[in-house]
Image 1 (cartoon, rainbow, N blue to C red):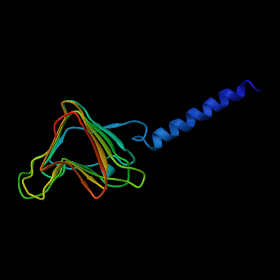
Image 2 (image 1 turned 180 degrees about the horizontal axis):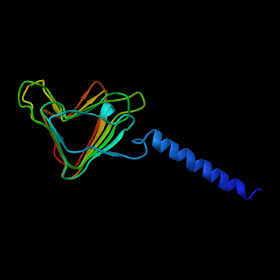
Image 3 (image 1 turned 120 degrees about the vertical axis):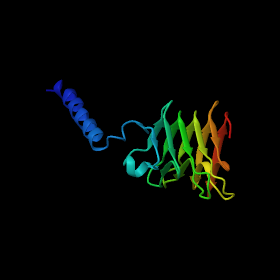
Image 4 (image 1 turned 135 degrees about the vertical axis):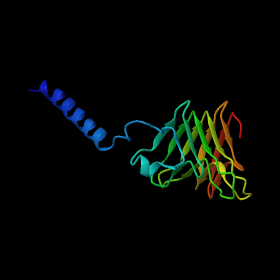
Length: 165
């Protein structure tokens, strides 16, 4: 009987892991943000339960408003290898990315691609805006631009820049 107990525990562990994957499909691995144009990608609404995302090389995500946003419900972790661009050149202060911190921690963005806001308002938009702090890694070849390249409303900001801001 002692020999069967390890198999039983392995079986139960497998069933529990499968149940978690089916109950929270985005929690198990990162989610690819698909190419889109003309709408904001609200992370908490579009991908409930997920917190880790990637914009793959060759993918372009654009909007005339804020492109990608996340409220304080998750500790957001986003890797951009594509193009994220807010295209409104008017008076509206729209951001390429707008991420709020959660009680559990600050959002983190690692950029290999391009994150842009082309807004022209003097109190305007950032390529990457953190609410309540965040961490930005702009890797070699990465570009973050806007009236403020990287901006934080209200808390500490860590920026590691090997690209262009």
